[in-house]
Length: 113
Length: 110
Image 1 (cartoon, rainbow over the protein chains, first blue to last red):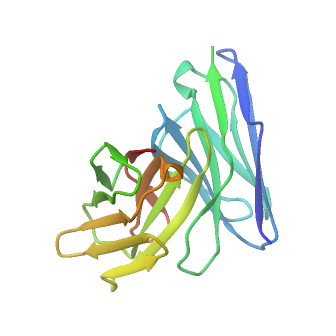
Image 2: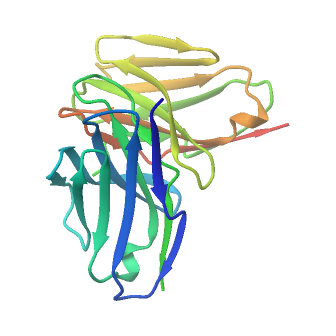
C-alpha cells in the first residue's frame, strides 16, 4: 500500500535560519508531488508541484524553494526564514495520468521566532 | 490564489442532523473534490466528482455539482460527533493542480 511520510511534525526556528522539510512516498512510482502551506488553520495555498525528478513548478514567489532529488522524495527549503514563513506545511501526492484525489502527509507545524 | 469559496465558514449542529456545505468557484473545472481535516492533521480525501457528473454518493456523503452555477454542495446525513472537522472543496482546473477553498468548520454536538 502507498504511504506518505512527512517530518518533522513540529519545528521552531529562529528568523534567518535555514529550513529543510522532507517528504517521501512509498508504494508508488512517478507520483505527482505537492507542497502546500496552510495559515491559521484555514485555506491551503499551493507552493510547489512536481511531475518528475528535477521538475519543479513554483506557484507563488516567496522565500522558499523545492527540490525533487529522487522519484519519491520532495524537499522544501529556505536559506533564511522569515516570520511570515510560519505555518502548517503539507506534502501530498497523486497518481500521474489519472483523475484521482490527493493523499496528504500529516503536516509540519513551523513556527519562526 | 483561491478558487473555491465555502459557505458557511462555520456550522454547528446537533448529532443526528444533516450538515450541508456549499462551494462556489470561478473558472471551468475538470473535477471538484472534497476533503476533511481534523484539527492539526493532514487532509483526507472524501469524494471526487467530475465535471460531467451531477451527483455522487459515498456512504453518508452526497455531493452535487452544478457547472452552470459553478457550485457544489456536500451533504453529510445523520451527522455524528466524529464528523466534527474542517471540510474543504478543491477544484482541478487543468494540469492536475488542486486549488483549495477556505473551508467550512463543522461542529457536531452530541
